[in-house]
Image 1 (cartoon, rainbow, N blue to C red):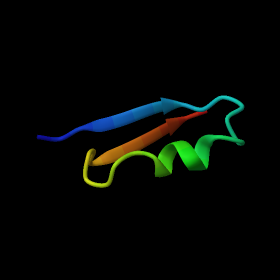
Image 2 (cartoon, helix red, strand yellow):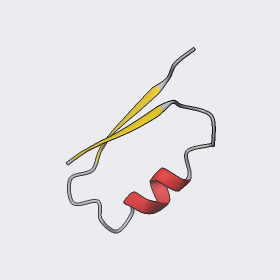
Image 3 (spheres, helix red, strand yellow):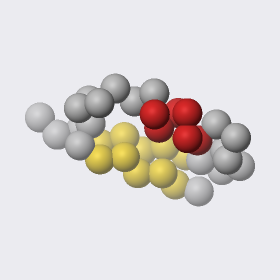
Image 4 (tube, rainbow, N blue to C red):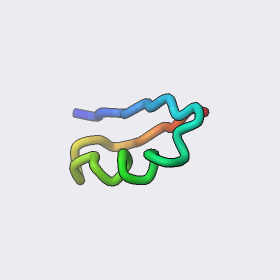
Length: 35
């Protein structure tokens, strides 16, 4: 099964890196960050 994470990231520079790192490895095939 293929999972894609789409995250809104407007003014999220302080939390974006940690949020992406908190996604469990192998849980999704693609991460899309939308500003």
